[in-house]
Image (cartoon, rainbow, N blue to C red; front, side, top):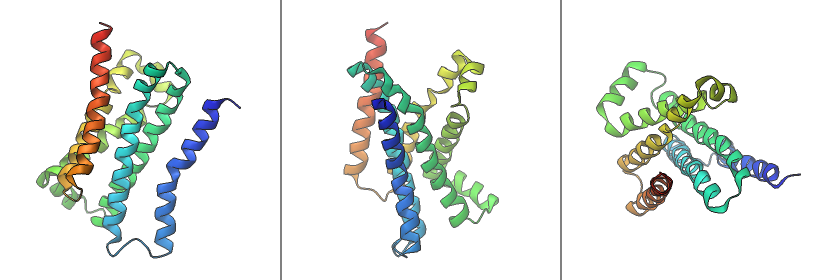
Length: 193
């Protein structure tokens, strides 16, 4: 078995652990005193972690020269979308019970919800067009569209910060990592211009 195939299987299984843990904790009644907040926070944090991990794949490939690692990018991006979807569904189903009018008012009224919704819509467009057929159909436009991941990572991190439930240290950690990853991309483009 090729190393990349084994790595994909390990990462796939590992990426399911947070969701599986939530399910097990729900059945055991261990989702804290406020389960909706706990699920919302857990899925949101994992969406950001996986989004930033997705952004790290290209720099890792360029720095190491190990091209097969690029095969992990789509899977990681789809897992980021998976957790973002769980995050969105927790808000829309458990918080608002599909009350579309109230949800719309919430999006307009609270900036962190506005950013969260914008991030989700960007990730949705990336997930929908992540297929090989979309790559062929869109051609160069696919690459341009998939640059939305940069904007989505910034809006996701800003949403995370504005929620106000996290420490400044935690936000700063992710901000430093994201800045380094985006800075690497700028450096790479300038270097090869």
